[in-house]
Image 1 (cartoon, rainbow, N blue to C red):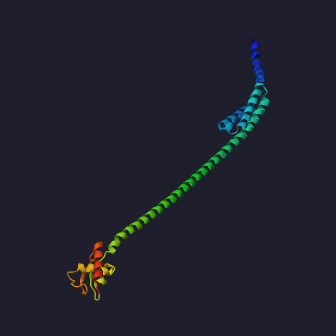
Image 2: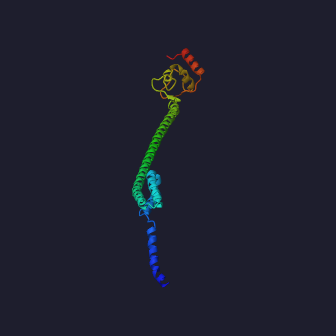
Length: 238
C-alpha cells in the first residue's frame, strides 16, 4: 500500500504527458484571420469588394475544415493566407472609402457650382425681364405724356386762337379793310357785320375815325353772314 502511494505522483505525471501528446494543437493564424475578416465586414468590405471578401471567407472555411481533420499545419497556411489577403483588403477598403469621399465631395462641389450657375442664370433672366419691364413702363409713360401734351395743346389752341372782341381803328383803315383781317372775319365782304354792331358810333360806314373802338360780332349765324355779303354787294364801299 505504501509503495502504491509512493508511485502515484509519477503515474499522474505520465498521464498528463500522455494527454498532452494526444491534444490537437491550435493554429497560430486562425484568430488573426477571423479578426481581419470581421474588420473587413464591419467596414463594408463584403459590399465594396464582394469577390475579395468571399475569397478570404472561403479560405477561412477551408482552414476550419482542415482543423477538424487535424491537418493543423495546412489549415494554418490557409489562415495565414487569409490574414494576408485580409490586410490587403483593409487597405483597399480604406483607399476606396477615400476615393468615394473625394468623389462625393467633387459631386457636391459640381452640384454647388451648377446651382450657382442656375441661380446666376435666373438672376440674369430676372434682370433682363426687369429692364424690359422698366423700358416698357418708360415707353408707356412717355406715350402718356405725349397724349397729355397733345390734349393740353388742344385745350390751349382755342385759347390761343381766341379772337378779339374789339378793334381799335387806326389811321387809313376802313370797315372792309378791318373785316379782311384774319383776327376779325378774314373776309372784306363781311364789313356790314361791323357796321351793324357799331351803329351807335358809326353813322356812315364810309367814314370811321382813328381811335374808335369797334365791337366785333362773334358767333354769327350763316344767315347773318349771307345777309352781310348780300348787303356788301348791294351797297359796296368805294
